[in-house]
Each structure stands twice: as C-alpha cells, then as structure tokens.
Length: 491
Image 1 (cartoon, rainbow, N blue to C red):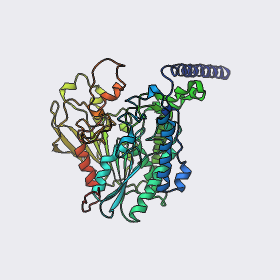
Image 2: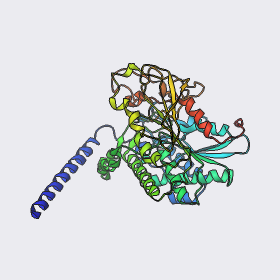
Image 3: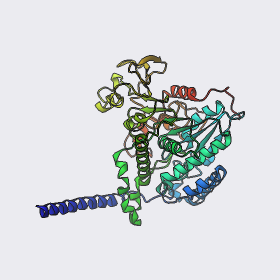
Image 4: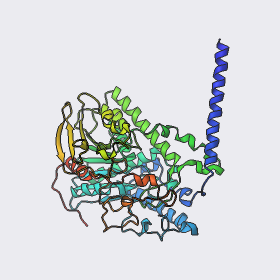
C-alpha cells in the first residue's frame, strides 16, 4: 500500500512538472511576439539602495534622484532611433508630453511650503507605476492649511518602466522612512505628521505605521489617509514571478513584462513588469502577517486613526482585504472607511455583473464595528441623486443625508485609479483645467472605432480616471487636518 502511494505521488509530481514546464514554454514563445524592447524598457537608472537611504538624508535623496533623471536623458532620450522619435512618446524631447517641457516636472519628489511657519507635515506616497503627480491636489490642500507637504517619488518611479524590473518593496519602505525623518526634521518633535497613501503608497503608509508602533525611534504619524489602498492583491500577483522565469535567458527578456505598451502618459508608466506585481504581493503579504501577529500580541492599540476611501469594485486591489485584513483589526480610535457604491441607475441594470451589484453588501460586515462606515450611493434605484449613509462606530443604524453631487449618468462605477483626481485635473479630468497642458488629456478620451488603430489601450480608456465625488473627498480630508488658521500658499 505504501509503495503504491509513493508511486502515485511521484506520478502526480511528474504531471505537475510537465504542466509547469509547458506553461513556461508557452510563456517563452509568447514573449517573442511583437516589437523588441525599447530603451526605456531595458535601461535601469542607478538609485540609492535601502541601506544608503537609511543612512542618508533628503538632500542626498534629491541629488541621487537628479542623477537618475540625467541618466535617463543621456541613455534613453538622447539615443532614440528615428522610429521612436514620435509625438506619442514621453521620452522624445519633441513630444508635447515630454516632462522636461513642463514648468514643474511632477515625476520628481517635491516639497510644498506654507506661507508661514508650518503647523505640521504630511508625507504623500503615490501608487505603483505612478508618480508624485497623483497626490498633487491633496498636497496643495495640506499646504494651504499650514502644513509642509512632502511628495515622495518612490524608487523605480518617474523615470523609465525598466526601473521597476529591479526595485524591491524594501527600497520603497526605506524611502518612506527617509521622507518621514525629513518631515519630523522640518516641523520639530511635537507637531503633527500625517501620511497620505494612494494604492501601493497606502500599503507603504500602513507598513511604516505598523513598524513605528513596534520601533519607537521611528516618527509615528498622527493620522493616515488612504485612497484605494493596496492591502490585498489578486492571487495572480502571488505567482507573478513564475511568469518571468523565461527572462533569465536573454532571448526571452520580454517575458519579464506583463504589459509592453506605448509610453504616452507623462506621469505614469503604461508598461508593467513582472517584478512590480511580485513586489506588490510581497508587500501586502508582509502587512497581512504583521497585522495578524500584532493583533495576537495585542499591540495594535497604538495605531493612529485611519480615513480610507475605496470603491466597492476595484480591479487592481482587493476591496474586501481593506475591510477584513486591516479594518477588522483596528482599535476603536476614530477610524472611518468611505465606500463608493456602483451607479444603480437602471441604465446599467442589464449590463452590470451580479457580483458588482452585490459588492457593497458583501463588503459590509454585520453588527456594530469599531470604526465608522460611510457609503456614497444612489438615493434610490434609478435615481441619480446621491446620499451619504453613515453608521457610527458601535452602531448599526445608519444616518442618511443628501449629497449635492449626482451620480453622472455615463459612469457605472468609480475605479481604482480615479479616487485622488478631481474632475478638473488637467491630465486625467473629465472637465480638465485648460490653463495647464501636459500634452494629452486622458480623462476626456471616449474613442469609438476599430481595435488596434490607436496607441491608446482601450481597456484603460474605458476606465474612469477622475472622481466625480472628489469635492466630497477633499472636504473630508480637510476635516481631519488639525485645526489651524488657514494660510494662503506662497507663490
């Protein structure tokens, strides 16, 4: 009997091995299709290591950042061949979306100073493949409230997509520690410091805060504001590293990429390497493990209050993980989650997935919770008017108040990428501010035609890029900024 089991086990292992080798062969073959890798997909600029960042300061980080941008210009922009010198390439100096043309290149780290002495500081952490541009409007809000706003460019971002093929989440976290040290240096030992994190930046804000609860030498934030936080990711990201295995052979270098797309966005990569997905999983797994351990050890009582904004449908991160992994373990400290429901207009009834219509009810746990829950939703089915349904911590009965912002009839839901951008954002807005021009207006694109005719990724075009409820988001963030006399920003 034992011999038979051993034989069966060996046969099963053999079948699994053959299956995996077949998948890798298919992946290697598929990677050979299409154009060869472009310079921005092969050149990796030099950045500081985690150890160097932990030993360094903000000035040193900015100097290293400048060197990385200089390398990109010399090794990528100055070496493009004729076929790459096109109007839709952000790395071509003749393109309107070339960041070097702008009065301010928001791919880089920045500090926004208030007019008077700062009353506090905020560190803003952008998302994966993104840049400091994504939290610019929120940074300006904090600045206008008297805070010094530090917008950090995370390592591997803002330069070329190839930079994400080698970066690790430990590098991102080291840069976060450096920015928090700079925040504390600028405002002294007692002023409040908040952290704002978008997507992967939200994960970093949570990880840093958990570390600060365990290591007193780290400056602990007084509050977190999270937008579409990456607390959990899809199961595919866990095994993304396997998809890149053929890339160990130079012939199959394109296997290191999940997406290879034209780079027409001046402040975000369109191409996406396997390593980026792998690092996002490793970061979220570290957060999950640390939360579980600290919860068992009753060490989460020191967490600051968290205000989170999350769409109930999110194709990038796991919305349930925000509730079940993070919020379910929070102490009763004034935290709140704001959920944006799908548009329940009958216009979309026959096209909306059942899972999308039921997403809200599956997200919300039953019974009283230790945090406040707010839902932005239609006042009633087939009604574009919206309401705010708020359930306080420890309560089960919601308070309903009207919201002056209707659900736009042509929007069926919010998206992962939309939450931090106002409708008048010059790049992503549906009603962009025309006084600023970044070479393309992605929020107004609504193309109809045949596949393959445009350089645009049509899936990305379908996804809403700005938040129609952003005025509400901005008001709620302003409410959690410590009271101070608002000042006018210095210009």
